[in-house]
Length: 143
Image 1: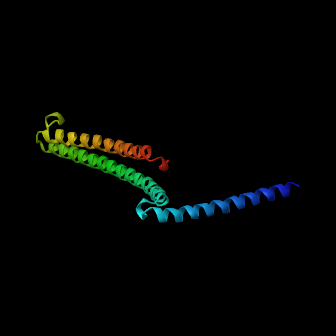
Image 2: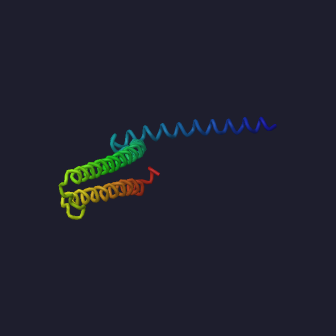
Image 3: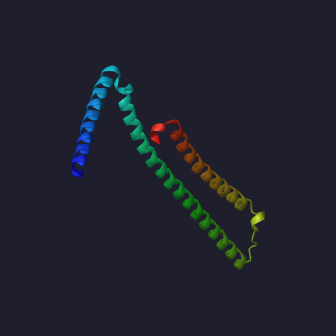
């Protein structure tokens, strides 16, 4: 008896699936007749879904780029600071007066540039996340 009920339910699902496919095909043909290709609602939904997939991928790629950019900034700063310290040690060992960090305009400019780069990197990351969320909020099909 249980198997018969399961078989009947399976048959109902099969019939419902077939009926839904017929409705989908009829709607598709009707939309093709009524709407131009670029205004067909079914095509628009398909394009939106494709854009959603691309958006997720692009967000991930931008995140990777921002991380790589920050890594490059950090490594450049470490290298330049290390080189500056080596030069200061060399100056001290040869008796050349060593300029303090606060009295060195080039070093102060260097620090300002890296500070701005750090802030810009954070702003870019926030903008990327905000853009993604903004797109999602304006297009409910993407959720």
